[in-house]
Image 1 (cartoon, rainbow, N blue to C red):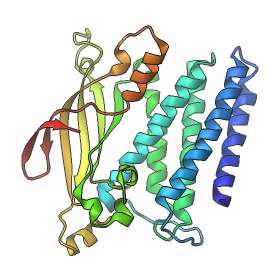
Image 2 (image 1 turned 90 degrees about the vertical axis):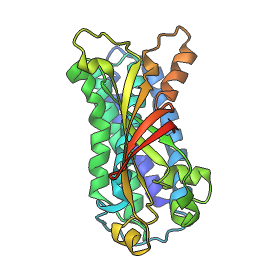
Image 3 (image 1 turned 30 degrees about the vertical axis):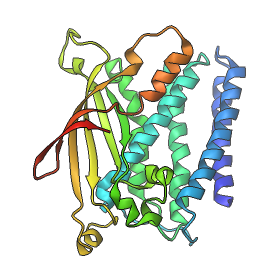
Length: 292
């Protein structure tokens, strides 16, 4: 609880600094203040829920680091990139809506999402089951600043997305991989797939393809009952990487007039739409009529 309160306090201090820096600009300070208050409350609730779901079976220890860069086929690192990216994107849209300039909104959003991800490493550092990871911290930073691509290319070409399907391996180690669908969604890397979707127009100077049409490269893993490759092999599990290629839609490019519908499409766009998919697992090609 002390860690949560400390993290929450640091976030509030950071957001107050942001508020002090930009309130003199021609922005809606009332709207900005409300965003800070609501986001802080949601963040506190989210971190409390994460603590209950992820760390409920872990005991406390003195803070320490743990090098987990070779574990879980790096699926956890990809997850950190995805989460940090989405936090930055959400914060960016909210701050821009106050009238803040795009450059300032992106800078403060990237910094705040990095700060919001930091407490996870603090939690891990005090947990006997984990330990703080510098690899996670690097992944957080990459994800938080990935949206800066729009200032380099005048638009976002790369959209991280996520999909999930329950795997049979969670039943083998439910305390580690999840006892129910909500826990598995967060813990079971076997069921998770992370995607990078991009416009077909990345290959076309004249933008010949529809803006909403995309293709997507996915990454996942299988038979990861244990984090360590040695532990998996020692228990008869052949943890292997899965690379996928599929079609996708960019729902943000679909023009709608209703604001609520635009928000809904933006939320759905963070998830990969199921499509026929080609998989390469290092040994053979597998065709999925519908992959999700």
